[in-house]
Length: 159
Image 1: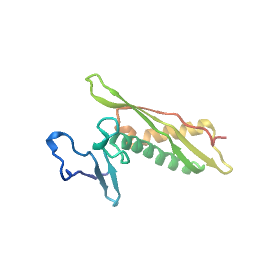
Image 2 (image 1 turned 45 degrees about the vertical axis):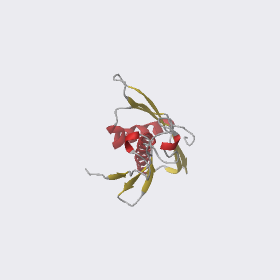
Image 3 (image 1 turned 135 degrees about the vertical axis):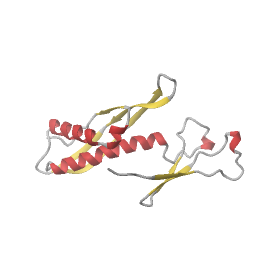
Image 4 (image 1 turned 120 degrees about the vertical axis):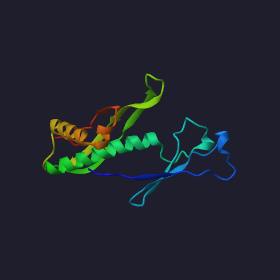
């Protein structure tokens, strides 16, 4: 169906000695459209001097990818069904814990989408739930994760 590419670039900084394990984890993600996103390790795992707290960490990127994928399908299905949306917000949360082998992983992802519908045709809660069901089933990212993923919609724009 398609191939996707991203380039991750990291470079040792002047004065850093790699083998001391005291090097910056700041790096950049480069995407084919030209976007460059600063990346770093997540806060809390390393001393603050070794990370860039303003950058996106891989765990946040995973959550954003899952929420974005779900949203894009949701918007498409809502438009196809004749509903109008003026805004969409998702306060996604992921929980990291250790697996049976003691390795950390994102065990759960909770999407909390809030689609604000407008116009004369407003969906019922059941129709919103169906839109989320279809979106989740179609989402490439959700289909690629082994994390438990739940959707807890906010029904602010429901009929």
